[in-house]
Amino acid sequence: MQRGLPAVGVFALVLSAGASWAQTVAPTYAEHVAPILQQQCGSCHRPDGIGPMALLTYQDARRHAFTIKSRVEQRVMPPWHLDRTVGIQEYKNDISLTDDQIATIGRWVDAGAPEGDPALAPPPVEWPVGGEWTLAEELGRPPDFVVRSAPYTVKPNAQDQWWTPSLPFDGLEGPRWVRASEFKPAYPQGTKVVHHGHAQLVQELPDGSRRLRALGRYGVGKPGDVFPDDVGMKIEPGGTVSWNLHYYPIDVEVPNDIVEVGLWFYPEGDEPALETQGEVRFTVDQGGDMPWAGDIVIPPHSFKAQQGIHKLDRAALVHSFRPHMHMRGKEQSVEAIYPDGRREMLAKVDRYSHIWQISYLFADHAKPLLPAGTTLLFTSLWDNTAANPLNPDPDQWVVFGQRGVDEMSHVWLGMTYLTDEQYDQQAFARGRPERTEGGGQ
Ligand code: HEC
Image (cartoon, rainbow, N blue to C red; front, top):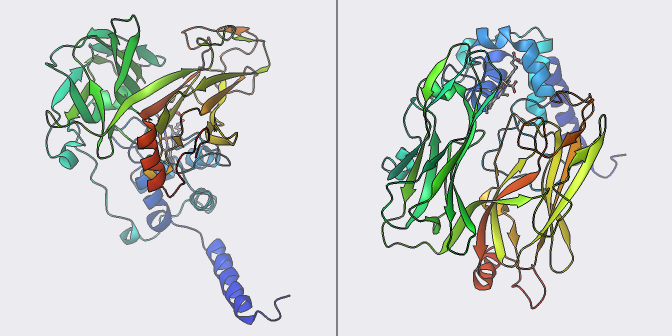
């Protein structure tokens, strides 16, 4: 078959010989597995982390070898629920494992979890010292402004707990432009129990509408976010901060936990060119022109889907995607239908898990750039069957509601709205043609 292509034939032979050699030699902890556990698990599975056990030493890894194998093969760990077959695949905070890494862990466990030569293990990572602002080094100073949650006592050995205080937003003297924000649980106990959280600034405007600004969000693998150069979020004094904290209990009581959100501002008088709104909520289940949608009714032992449509009257750059449903949530996606009719899947989770609220942060060059007139189509799928491991009771009819056992469906997108001129500049920078009249892209 390879007549006429001898060079390729020889090359292929060498490659396949290499592959079979690698498959017969078992991976070792020190050389092959420790780097994966350190890089992709250690941020949570360390003594101060939110994971239920540390995975930093050979003894740790060996003790948990079988559960590690099963969790990574099912892609339950690390928590990252994006569908790998559709939509944008490049994210700033991607902690998922490659197929090769999963196979390496599997073969290591099957071979009896050998240690190998400890000298080949990577040097230990210096984890951020508990209690310090991790962005302080990059930004050259501690935050300019700190917002604090109200104290909460986390009960030991209980179920997951949610704490949602609303507190007055005091202390800001005039409007400021946020450059970066970081969400910091208290040290040392808070880092073990705060699973995820969000702090949102809510302000009533004279016209009766509400302005929402996401001050801080704590998601997987990323405690904070620095906006790109010349992008900022404008905040004004007044209003309230609405907290949504998810605590994950440990064996001991954690009294009076307080979470802090630190904000770094642009220098006074320095206005960035683009104003981001932070996370904006797009409902799938209610509001707007969807009169029936609050009406979630999911029969026992069944699946149910729902769609929401939002048309953008301005161009936008999208920074992040955070799906939100409750215990029956299975899939959620956002597609763009461009003004020229083209349709594109932007992002989709196909293994949604209510215990995680992950904000998927698009890599800078992969952020969706949407012309004015784009329609966003959101789709939610619920699984109320016994096959859903988080389903507390598949015999129930499930309706809309705030509790985890009721359902909801909305999506948070990090939005920076653009003028048509700004859109053209961004499109040009990406090597795309300029927006045309009535067209897009
Ligand atoms: C963002 C934090 C985070 C990361 C990263 C993470 N985990 Fe976890 N892990 C958790 C939390 C929290 C739990 C407990 C809740 C759950 O099971 O979802 C957990 C549970 C587990 C369990 C089950 C423990 C048990 O006894 O039931 C295993 C095994 C595990 N993780 C392995 C890993 C491995 C291996 C990696 C890396 C490849 C990893 N995790 C990455 C946070 C994390």
